[in-house]
Length: 92
Image 1 (cartoon, rainbow, N blue to C red):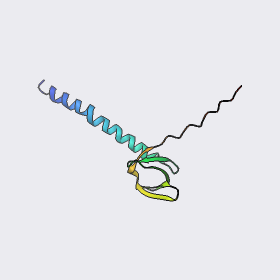
Image 2: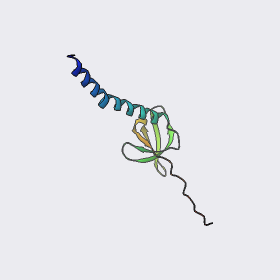
Image 3: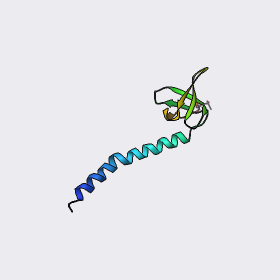
Image 4: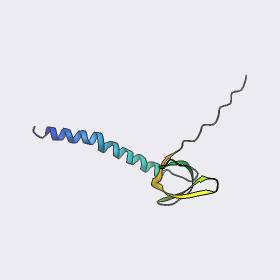
């Protein structure tokens, strides 16, 4: 019975810190594994770019016409969702 507070503290620590961190790590791993040439991405610096080439630990991205830079794969923070096609409303 004297160990119950210690167990409770460990459980709270796991629920509030360890579990969310491992979920975030798995999400980042899925993002990194799913990258492909042509994806529009956001870098951790806030720069929007398009992937032109992928290597094991690096990616070459186009940030403007004729401007490509090489970044670490870990610098890719998010993949932009493709914009939905505009809907056309026709008169009946």
